[in-house]
Every structure is written in structure tokens, then in C-alpha cells.
Length: 281
Image 1 (cartoon, rainbow, N blue to C red):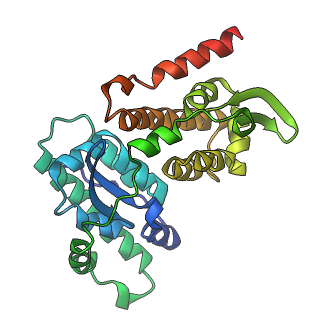
Image 2 (image 1 turned 120 degrees about the vertical axis):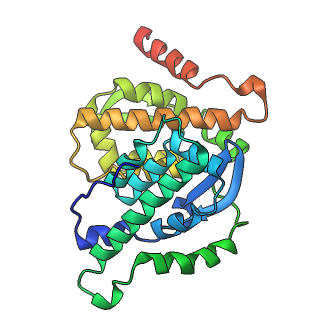
């Protein structure tokens, strides 16, 4: 397995990555779309412990769907996110893949605890002991209801809202671009061609996450919020937001259509259709 790259992080940054998040931002394990395992981790410590017993097929699912790396990035650990991303697309047996991911995360957790506890020698006990204590606690929580969206919630997040609730793109306060989106599909299509400064403007004001939360997609709102405050060039930021929303729309369509083959058409179609409308309109 590729060694975890050592990236210098400060004590406060390490402590932030190790923080416990609220349940709605926790990592929910799934076997596949629409098949929750009812296991949630609200910190890197908990995730490292959960990975020891979680179904190997679940690990493969989340690696290939980029969900581990997105969650690590949300916590602020881009280094760990990149390392896990390198495992994607490889023909690694599920059992071996779980072992590699578990080892990678456990080593990173131990490294972060040493950094976070650098000024407190009494707190420098190996993180392995913390994981052992967490394992028994997690075992009793295996049936906690998962907060990941179900078929009905996905369909709701993908709904078309009325014009008064549509997202209106602005270049700055009082400078509308005349581009609106009434659904996530339309938004995914529009954001690709909107001015990069508009994306920067709305991201820093928290407009994107507020609209996604209004639609009922708090996970997407949280992912986009994680980009705020970072020194990312507008063009690159637009690319990141577009990719993030596009992938989320695709996943939501898969979840929403899980109970009916007729609804499984890829989300790209309505998005591309809207792009065509915008170009011809």
C-alpha cells in the first residue's frame, strides 16, 4: 500500500480535522444505493473503528463513489482525501481494499492526535487505545437510523420549484445575470457557463448552501460550504462546484429511481436539455 504522505499541519488544524461533527454531517455507510447499513461515524476516530467490521462491499462502494474523499475534504483533510482517491479504479479485492483504507485512516488519525496533543504529553497515548474504546460504543449503535437520503427524499431534492424559489445568479449585489435555476438539474447545467465571479460571489455569501438546504439536500449544502474561505481562483472554484453538483445530481437520480426502472434515466439528459435551452434562448 502506498505510504500516507506527510503533510505539515498545525495543532489547531489537526484538532479541527479530528473534531466530532453533528449527526447530519456524519459519514453514513451504505452497501449500495438505497441499501443503508445503519452505521454512522461522526469523527475520524469513529470511522477508523467502524472500518474494522464494516462490510467490505460497502468500502468498495464508497471508494468508487468518492464519498470517503468528499467527507475527509469536508473535515479539512485534503491530504487524506487525495490518498484514498488513489485507491479508486483499482481491481483490489474488497477485503484487501477495506484493510488498506482502514490502515491508511488509522495511521492518519494517530499522526493527527500526536500533532494535536503536542503540547500535552499526558494526552499523547497512541490513538489505538481510543479506537478500542470506541469499538464497543459503535457496536451498540449499529442500528442507528442513517441520515442518508432515501428514494422519496432524493425525488424531493430533485423537484422543480416555483419561480419565486428559483436560484437567481448575480455577479454582485444589485447585478443580476438574468440566469435562474428552478431545480438541481437546471442548476448543474447553468453553473457550467455562468461567470466565475458569480460562483465566487454566491459561495462566499453562503447562497448555494442555503438554496440546497431549502431543497432538502443538507449533505450537498455541507460539501459546498466546505469550499468557502479557501483561496481558490474563480475559474477553478466554478469547476469544483460544477463537478460537485453534477455528481450529486447523478447520485440523487439513481437513488430516486431505485424503486422504478422507468425513473432511472441519467440526470445528464435534463441538464443538457437545459443547457441547449439557454444557448438557443
